[in-house]
Length: 241
Image 1 (cartoon, rainbow, N blue to C red):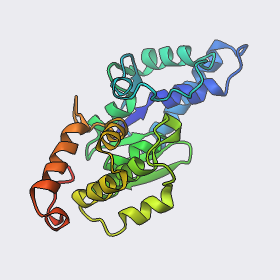
Image 2 (cartoon, helix red, strand yellow):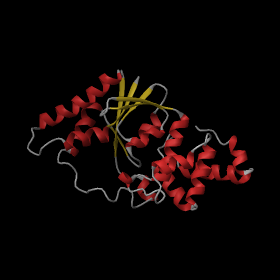
Image 3 (cartoon, rainbow, N blue to C red):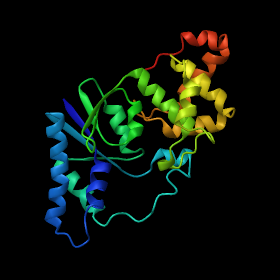
Image 4 (tube, rainbow, N blue to C red):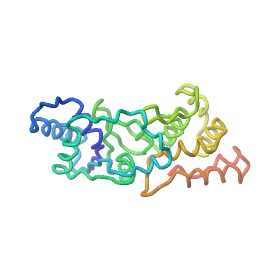
């Protein structure tokens, strides 16, 4: 089993627990301990770590992405990132965030190690290293998670979703939906605004393939909805994968 580790979160969590006057060796020991703990708990015999680099495509789609987050970073954050690169060969991903690299590289023989709930749209094995919790995500549950987020938005990333729709209302909207086409149709009707739905979907979607753009999936699903007999045709829908 290969562990795919969200090194952004590893570095940030370690840096947030430290004081500016902590010894540098202590900082590095904390980072190494956390990675070692993940590898032991997942029984992984291989690993890859991913760090977000520059030029994140999500800002091009939605300039207000994460705009409300504090600009000041923890004192030790950059040192932690450098240590993870030097010690564990953490890969810096330019053009997209680490979450996309995790999604792209997930296979039947990997396990995503993160606490980011957004990643629960990616099928396969997941490990939350803070809760020490293992989760199996199916194609169906992962796709529903994505469309739930389209409805509710993601406050932590400044993605608004639809006003006054929280998890309970979102569950009601998606109740009875089985295929992706049915999920898409229900969410599209709730939005009544294709531009907003498309923008949010493109920002929320975590890639499964390099350079994937959810806009292509959106257009295919619209054609499936419009080109057939509406919801009747959606019993077939396009494949989940």
